[in-house]
Image 1: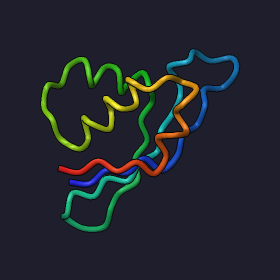
Image 2 (image 1 turned 60 degrees about the vertical axis):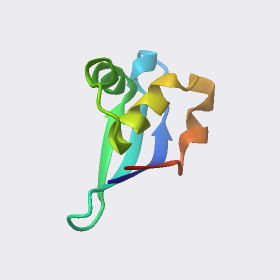
Image 3 (image 1 turned 90 degrees about the horizontal axis):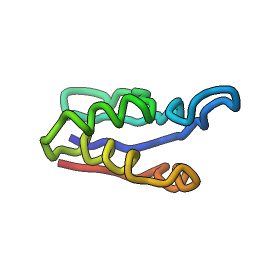
Image 4 (image 1 turned 30 degrees about the vertical axis):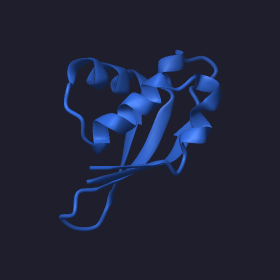
Length: 81
């Protein structure tokens, strides 16, 4: 599996910080890569409840562990199994 973060959308000014959204391509080898979105809030919930170590959860951990001021630095990062 290969996961690539392709964009970051900041939370709207009137929203909670957890509404940051990340777009990523997921290539599981079964066809064309698929584009998905995930919010910071959802990433936090998934990381808290998953113990596996695959490309997807490593990407989520990177999002959760990164300071909000540095979210754009995650763009074009690639995680592979």
